[in-house]
Amino acid sequence: MKTATKVAEAAEMIPEGAVLLIGGFMAVGTPERMIDALVARGVGGFTIVANDTAMPGHGIGKLVSAGLVAKAVVSHIGLNPETQQKMISGEMEVDLVPQGTLVERIRAGGVGLGGVLTATGVGTPVEEGKQTVEIDGKTYLLEKPIRGDYALIAARQADYKGNLEYALTAHNFNPIMALAGATVIAEPHVIVPVGAIPPDAVKTPGVLVDHLLERGQ
Image 1: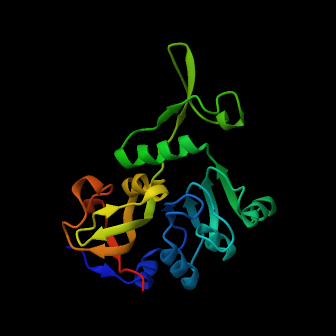
Image 2 (image 1 turned 90 degrees about the vertical axis):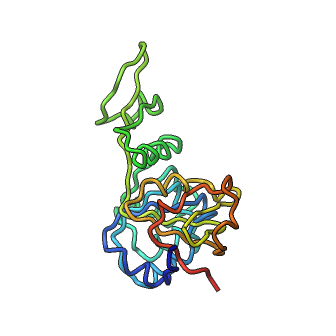
């Protein structure tokens, strides 16, 4: 059984310069209370790995606005003009990775693979500096796995063993990132008794979850 952790205490665990895997898609399925606690703490220099940097005032956009992000590894930044401005000014580094490649690199990091072979990016600037592999006459890029110091996960509900269930588009990235974080902090909307989540509905087993945030008020 896991003890629910206060969100401020969880934020205190994360050191300056940490690599954070943050779930969600345009702030849907993103751990908002955890992000608010990091902004309140004010320690940054983070490398953020996520699908996107959301929008100003939403999700990861709050970390960007607070100047806590040193680098973002994301599939797009089109919804956040602040990210664009910081990238152009050199205040923040942005590594744009095709969405499918990004999630597969995270998956590879989570399951212990040495990398991912993909044809996406062959013959473009994405190929620069990367190893290529030819299979049956077709060229692929070897994309290296991604792991994080912390995975910050949002879930619809959890039980006190840390088993997580997600809702709808909140499935985006959260279950995969839970595999690839050295320490996994889960932020459920509600916490229910063990057995209340049907086994088939558990997408992240509790063995992967290190800290379970107490539910929001």
